Image (tube, rainbow, N blue to C red; front, side, top):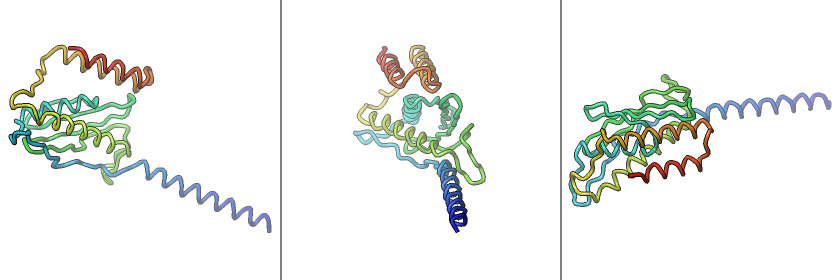
Length: 193
């Protein structure tokens, strides 16, 4: 009788472990969340940002979150990020003077399933953080007068600073520098004129 109870107990433990394993694997995948029709605020004087200003602010928001923005023309930006040297994500950001969207485009090492439209659970968090930074850039610019928002893409200092930030991010993601060292170096780079 003791052997039967022991065998039953082993089966119960096995089933509990199996169910927990399945639940854990399912928790790792999440439905891809495309963020569509995100409103662009008006300036405090009631005017809208120009299309070029919206593009500039979105690209600045991408760069601040360490995503690499590329202007594709026709009111579309693609933005990519490489995390820990292996997790790659690319999104498309179509925009107008009144709204923008962040749409899944491509990924590597993120367990994307095109049939189920699922992806690693971290993806949605990364995209939401990108949205928050873009919204922050837009909101901060609402009190600036029309025509005052401009970043010269050909500015060598900004390009060098951006490349240095990317390299710092890669070093941090590879574990070669700590988060504290990364933040200290980032602060130095961003404070340079």
